[in-house]
Image 1 (cartoon, rainbow, N blue to C red):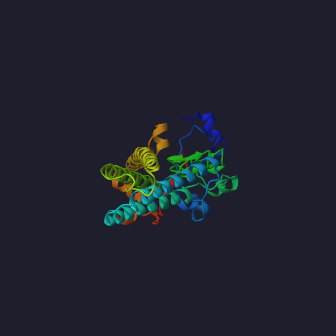
Image 2 (cartoon, rainbow, N blue to C red):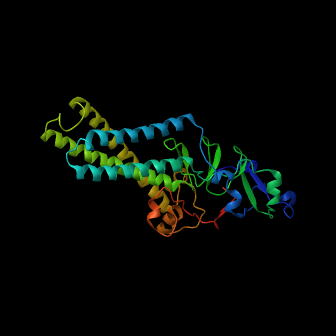
Image 3 (cartoon, rainbow, N blue to C red):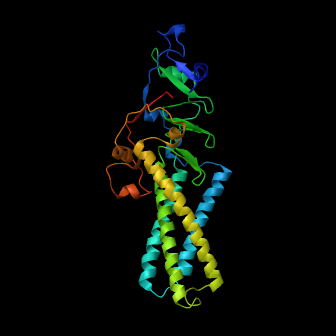
Length: 309
């Protein structure tokens, strides 16, 4: 909780009738403003964070998926004598891997909901025509008018609407506009990890029953090493992404971001049903497009925000 003195530094009050008597201790009134006013001009353009750590993590993510692709295809499926088994599992694994990488790309290159930077100018605040008792808050770090439920990200150097957290694996914040893609990314990574683990188990069983020299185009030691590494990778990411997926779905259903839960912020927004919260993130009505990283959800153009924290 900010002290009154602290809050005064980042607040602009309505003038006129309030006159000199207006101060930070008086009752505050929230100001509903259209989403278009606080949507960054970069929302429709390419978004990419130039963070070395994030870029390295994103590249590692792609390399790990490509490694799994290599082992699944060239170690397990192509040498298999069962053509149907290879076609079915190859198609399923490649489809899930493609959707996972597409979701990762969309989560990384989509504006998460950045508030226009540097719009907290005296002229712009005066143009809002604040009434006595109304206030707007400024972010002292990026000099932007800070809407309700927005938080400043030190990596993106912007205030992000409904910011959940900054994820280095997608080199971006998870916020209002890209949370769907992040959820899909964690879901598809968990699915391909589970699928890879199952295929590794079946391949080990097949190799134990048959000659190791015939169950793979690689030498037996190389085959064992590649499969063990894939097994370790699959198990690690299955656990990690499953937890992240569950955390994100719970956050969406409760309509409370990770930061809001961590800071235990008081709920100041209307409570909605779990289904309405899911529709707000994935778009509505429910369809297969919910599971597509190529479908952009409509978060509601008539949505308004409150310029207070």
